[in-house]
Image (cartoon, rainbow over all chains, first blue to last red):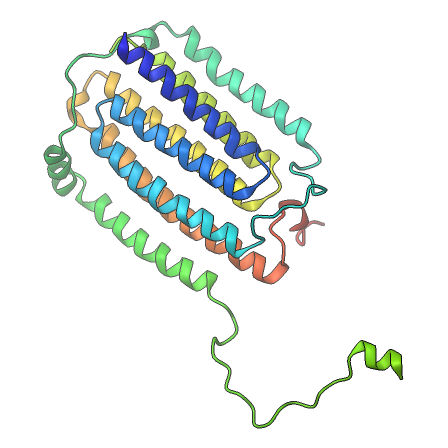
Length: 188
Length: 104
């Protein structure tokens, strides 16, 4: 019973945080709510006895991805959004209809299937030692590939985000000739 | 563990729909990326739930797949945010409906 109540509470909080992350106007608030949704999902992983995945989710999403998102928001247009700017695209009604249709198409088969209403077998755990052994024996090729992918993604992100201009421009000798400002032109 | 599996799946479907709605409806590119991350997380939750309720939970396949999925999602987020910064530097905007140079 306590398990059920915990699940519903966390699920409700996570859904509320996700809805807030997708609908608020202030972008930093959106990023914080997204971090809250990620943390709620980490708690649900803990509830499902997948401790290692829960902590990995917390480290990667709440720690790294949320910080990246905040950095991007602050490096682009900043926090302030004028209230005159529309939040959603002009064809939002079509998008909302498609979303509702998709949700119905996913949820209806889940509720209709009798085999998905089973409860969990007891005492199932994923100990870290076993995960490590499995990663280092059965999944060694995917592990190496993911390492390569992360390296390539890191280098690619740096190259893409790097400025085209050289960061240091040597000063030319003497000041460039000063141009007349608009006021001086109008005074003349 | 009396919560049936279908509740986890319905929760995951709702989270996926919220992320999809954000990715489709919002005009800001950063929020589109957050929506994508929410959709990926919903898929990960399905992996974990099916592992926990599955017939062979000793195999750890769901856990391992989720770990790889999290790593790939992190790489995707880094590259996506770098792309957004590059686009902002060239176009001075990250509103999705104004990035329509390829429109015929």
